[in-house]
Amino acid sequence: MERLACSRCGFGKPVDIFDPFCPHCGDPLVISLAKKRRRIRKDESMGAARYLDFLPLAKFDPAFSLGEGGSPLQPLTRLAKKFRLPNLYAKNEAVNPTGSFKDRGSVVAVQKAGSLGFKTVGTISTGNMAGSTAAYAAKAGLRSVVFVKEDTSREKILAAAVFGARVVKVRGEYSALFRKSFEVGRNHGIYFANSVDPYRIEGYKVTGFEMFEQLGRRAPDLVFVPVSAGGHLIGLMRGFHDLQEAGYLKKMPRFIGVQAKGCAPVVRAFERGTGRILPFPRPRTVAHAISNPHPPGGNIVLRWIAANGGMMMSVSDRDILRSQRILAEEEGLFCDPASATTLAAVLRLARAKVFSGRERIVLVISGSGLKTLEELDPMSFDIREAGLDGLEAVLSA
Ligand SMILES: Cc1ncc(COP(=O)(O)O)c(C=O)c1O
Ligand SMILES: [Zn+2]
Image (cartoon, rainbow, N blue to C red):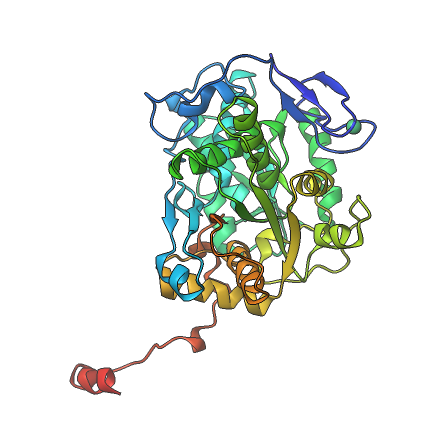
């Protein structure tokens, strides 16, 4: 059985689903796997089964899977030409079964919940993780409970409820709810697979493994990732770190974590060089999926980003919405505002002439735009009305 370890102070303990935090640093604990020879299983197709040696699962049981993973690494050819960045790609996680990268983590965490004998899994979420956890629970024959922020969109609430989850819209402060969920979990025997759950994070490593293979067994030079709680970025970094440890990779990519200007606690700590994050007052952004004002994984992100020569950046809502439109209109890729932060960050760096043009750059598109339609302004599109006999006039107008 794997153990939990603190990546800051080295504290370790057996896995405790109800308390996966370091008692000294407060940071989330990560899985430490017993060292063994690890290899990519070439006989398996993309997704978790191919990288089983790197995951805390004895086997990958397809009965828990909805077909997640194996997402395309899409060359952004038109944008590449326009912005003179010939090696620009999008790792499109929006194609996952419930429309976001969360499925990569849910498949591992829910499988673990099943093998540990839990009957109910839970999560607290701004939306995507709710639907994902509920869907995987349904597939596994488990019950699910999701606590969402009270301002979560109708689409996202319904997209969780439809799987039979008990959905609770919670009033109150998000980080207090985060802590409270573990207490509720312990009292009711519910495995809360939250944003920085150690097993969920292991699932995110797979995205990194796939990117490496899709680039012809090379790492990208730069990986742009939207950051909220920090779980996704921690998982991606751990994935490349595992590849390096297993001898597949010499040099780690540099990670650029992106937040919205209206909720940028990790960026603020990065820029001030304080080393520890503070809660961000009054978060406000169109990128709701990345609006956690006090990210539990923030300190780990800060430390690891700096260690690999990466950085944190923030982008404005205006640039986020513009980038979302660019990806849709130029590349046929409809992502949510959180994902669009990655292109906004690239465009800002391109304007500042930071790139040489030779870098292999990957934007991690974390979620689908179809769940955030309410953020689009219908007035800004070319939508007209006509009767049958007015059709041709409308086209030539
Ligand atoms: C679409 C999308 N992108 C990015 C994130 C941020 O991921 P994390 O909270 O692991 O940093 C989320 C989290 O909810 C999300 O739903
Ligand atoms: Zn510690």
